[in-house]
Amino acid sequence: MAYVQGFVVAVPAANKEAYAKLAADFAPVFREFGATRVVEAWGDDVPDGKLTDFKGSVKAEPGEVVVFSWHEYASKEAATAAYGKMMNDPRMKEMGASMPFDGKRMIYGGFAPIVDERSSGKTGYVDGYLVPVPAGNKEAYREAAAKAAALFKEFGAVRVVEAWGDDVPDGKVTDFKGAVKATPDEKIVYSWVEWPSKAVRDEGWKKMMADERMKNHTMPFDGKRMIYGGFAPILDA
Image (cartoon, rainbow, N blue to C red; front, side):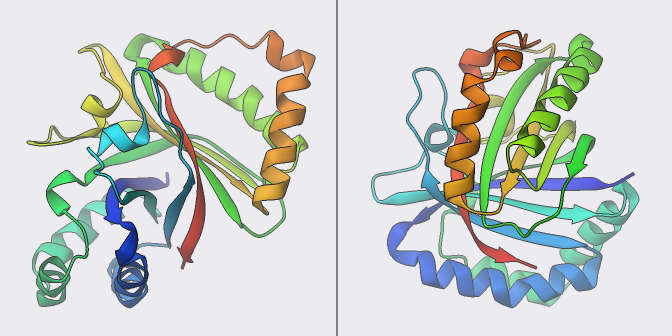
């Protein structure tokens, strides 16, 4: 089964070029370690929330932009092996010394996909989500997510992924659990929808919101704590 390592990062807007260069320089290294895909998506339409939001998830400061990023692996074993290689590779120490952002506020974790629906087309825009779901509602969430994924594809999405929290560590400053104010019985879902462009995404969402099937769509989680936002890819390797 495939595996995803998900990240959310706060990057100073002025450091966008430096961040993009660092990501491009190290993408081949991650591929060398076993990653099958590396994506970095720059915050474009990231709204403020009443209870939770992407900015709060990484304690973003004024002038910082949220980056939604993920690495894909063929399996959890491949991801674990890659992590071991990273910890012993001098190039990763170089990366740590040259990060154009505050790494202490980066959140990360390992996730196992429970929905992965694909269509044809190239990715030009990404909707990212973080969702707190009661552990006992896993199957109900998967079923609801699969139905929603079919609609997303119908309205233009090229891929929909829902990945269930598997190895989501506690952090000292920030973490995924704190991002969505997760309770002890909840798991974190790291999810994204890939679109050909922002225009297709905007039109797709209009159709989604007007569709009768969405009006009868029940959510087996607290939607008030779900985090969402739109991101423009700056790297897709």
